[in-house]
Length: 563
Ligand SMILES: CC(=O)N[C@H]1[C@@H](OP(=O)(O)O)O[C@H](CO)[C@@H](O)[C@@H]1O
Ligand SMILES: [Mg+2]
Picture 1 (cartoon, rainbow, N blue to C red):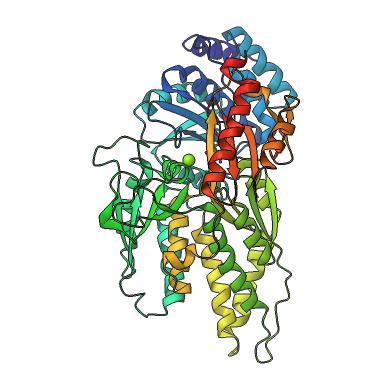
Picture 2: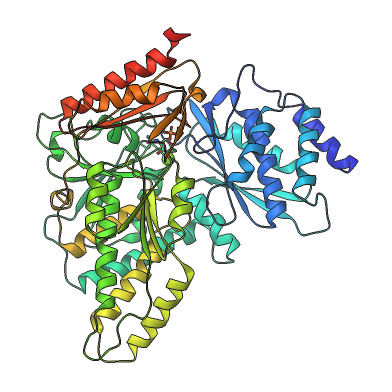
């Protein structure tokens, strides 16, 4: 390493001594912790992002957010050139970098890594950019400064502050920048509104939409998503869809406190700002950085519980719609040639997917695969299909289209425009093309997913109730257990089985065997210092009881009392 580079790193690193006792780990979705300990971590992730940009000679993203965590937490993650998550083989480096005890250690680690990865430091090549975004957390500003210092500590890297954004907006901008397409926040909003209008035109064909079912109330979690949805709503300026944004953050509520997709999905309780006035209405909830979306209804006036329409049902709705378009394309209409492309469609879920949803999707004839928790795994799996649809039950997901399939669709569309036959096929082609532009191809995105759900419900002529009736969720329960060391739990088979500590899986199996339709698994959270317990059974009481007996087992094997 050149002396200039070395001294730049040593002097910036000395401003960020490690926080006592904090051992950061990259986890399910980047580093997360109480914001006050995170400056050194964010500074080091700045360095990592700059190195990644040099290695790939591409634009990289750095997002400062702790998503659904409480407002006093924050976090940081890196977006790769494709707009997806940081390549997994760089995560171990992220961990050691974040934990390097002194500036000297840090420089040594970087020197070794740069050599191993053959990254050219301080070369004559053109400057590389790291886009830095943040959510609305008050700690974001000071962490932004730390990130910029980290990025600028690598000669040849430039930090670009892109301001307050949703996580999916930043990922989208990174992807677009590297594809040399229009890549500003305005371009993102333009693309969403244009493709949504196009889809609605194809669906409504100039007709007015369902009388009386035009209204959607959205819980913005008092975070960045609510604010951006207000802007998007102005741009849509569309008859037939009235979006009312609540908990936008403008009214002064606290981020994620009694609001937001995580709260709604896990607690199944009416969020603040919603109540008896909303009985029967279509409602939706975003999480703190707007990469998750769930729908819900308030079933009756005095109910504190909601009827949840979760990520699995959003996935099912998307799957039904996509399948319908593909079968229209496959029809041989009036001498018109049928589909000459064998489109491979796949659905990706995690063990948290409700068992009823997996059964439903399989009954539709779809290929369903399970991966471990975390969108980095789901996204990777979904990308092997021509159309890969992935969703976590908590509402994070998207639809990926392969380049060859999109090229085929474009060609098909041209071909069909010049023949009189097959207007339905042409519409199906156009609908699929519009979906590929509306839905965020970089990462799950609550704003684009809301627009797609709304368009598909119009297309089907379905109310939220009709949609919710696609299948009936098996009763489920999730619990968290504090333990001495959550890393003591090691799982296999997409996290459905515990291999360490010995004996616990057998004990869990013995509990499951007591329940009809019982299913239960445990895994260490990657975002919180807990073990998560998930249970399903044929009644709510049984699911609750299975979850709590397994939580007791976890406590017995690993809990604070067991040390
Ligand atoms: C059960 C659950 O909802 N887990 C969430 C949560 O991860 P954990 O590793 O379970 O803490 O946060 C992740 C990031 O948002 C998300 O991908 C994941 O689905
Ligand atoms: Mg999130």
